Amino acid sequence: MDKEQIYRLLCTEIDPVNIKVDEPMKAHTSFKIGGPADIFVTPDKLNEIYGVLRICGEHGVPLLVMGNGTDLLVLDGGIRGVVMQIAHKWAKVDIENTLVTVQSGILLSRLCRVLAKRGLGGMEFAAGIPGTLGGALVMNAGAYGGEMKDVVQSVHAIDANGNDRWFRSEELKYGYRSSIFRNGRYTLLEAKLCLEPREPQVCMDNINDLNLRRRAKQPLEYPSAGSVFKRPCGCYVGPMIEQAGLKGMCVGDAQVSEKHAGFIINRGNATAKDVLELINIVKQRIKELFAVELELEIQVVGEEN
Image 1 (spheres, rainbow, N blue to C red):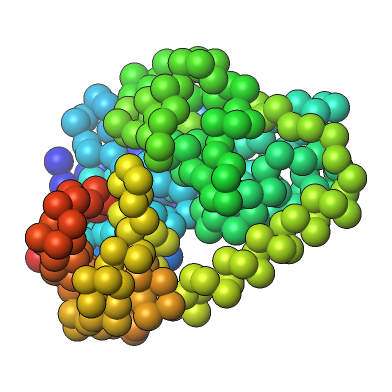
Image 2: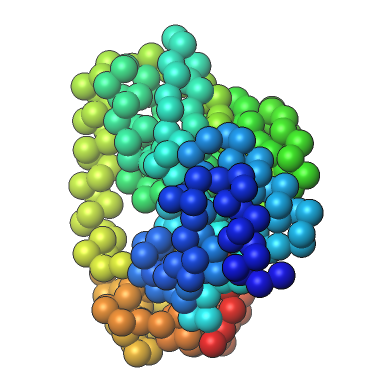
């Protein structure tokens, strides 16, 4: 089925204003890299999400569900099929004492500040993570000693067949940057978070302090996808890469950051090919010097040119 046929089918379920054809993915990822998606949809109603899932399932159309694109490297040939973004249109927050129900498209930075102002603590660690709640739930995002598993009570998700259910926290199989959702078979709608009472100013001070530390250590002035590699057991990736003499190394406009060697940055016109070549150089050198196999924390999607 070609993209024009897919487009016409989707128009029966979704407002056409929310559907784009041949949409450059560099406009939707923090890396600012990537070829076009055949079809890019941003549903603003629940029935539209169900419609996308039904059409893609019935017609065998590949579907990628994304949030804010902060951990994605989209290849230069782009993405075939449909990309569905669940982001700023899905950002409702309901607070009942210390139990908070939140839609998955909200930015973590915004959510953490909303909670802090209401005197709810426990999620300050996530205020500087540049992504949506949905993405954080999928990968059990964490920073500064906290992880999503510490605050999640349950998650509401839909499978590829349109069946929805609430998953209890013990069903999510949370591990280091992993969960049952990493297989891509579910679209996350919302979550219930269990927080704790705390003075609003204490929460805001914690957030501001962690953000200052983040700005001092991370290359936020350049496009990137955050930490490229998972942390191996007992090791820290940045210092290993620095010891290997790779800090500042470039392939095209992709560079191992001079500020934090665990990041690869886009200095302007980097391609996905540049980034992958640099990743492979780093992985090979670290394996040779430290006998450590680095695993990607970012997700690589799409097709090469």
